[in-house]
Length: 345
Image (tube, rainbow, N blue to C red; front, side):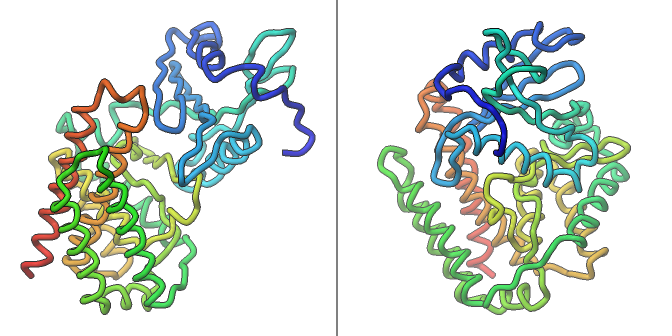
């Protein structure tokens, strides 16, 4: 981050920044501010805009502790989302100190950075549309076509068949190890059964994965394609690509679409996810084997189970333990159901 003057990291705490950013007076012209905390960010919703502040946290898969790192990933987020989100991402703005007070942009020294976005209409977000039963086929098709067009411009990645299989196995084993930690008190036999079934499928149906590699179906995808990241506005928008680790965007396009199908099923509308897949298959001339879709659903449900139970490692989520434990167990059962289909084929 060249030629950017910054104050000490300890000059303004995260709490001080959040308290400033959640004030209505910070954003001239807005009537209210809603602050939402996630694992990695604080998100501030005003009438027309969204401001995302990355928290100075470190996990196994990311490190946002340094200001330079947060700046870099803010820039990366704004950049990589442009193809699917158009002008929704407005850029990166500084949180500065001027004459002893915090302010957005303007003069002074930077103490942090925020991604600024246009606020999308909530009633058009796919998760809301599904929950309210207001989805229509044409709106879904528009978003699906936009996504597929993006896939067609994405770079493909070459793996040897063995390397690709090992990549899948390694991630499954990592999820398994995390879920088997005693502090989570999950059903050990269930986790081990899912692990065994997934790895068995990879090893005994290697032909399916070899074909995906040969057909160059391993590309740079969205990385976190969930219904809440898809806006079915007349001009569809897809947001929140994974910015902190580009390797998490590299996958079989069938895995990404299977994940979306899984999430739509969880919301009670599997036909929406299926329409995305069918649109891709038709426009790409790529008929994905049903058992491969089932495998990828199980794999992603296994990952989502770990992400859910991982909330219990943070104090602020302890009061919500029943909620996150229930979400974890729901995903584990979805993985079991998918594995049962694979085994019984």
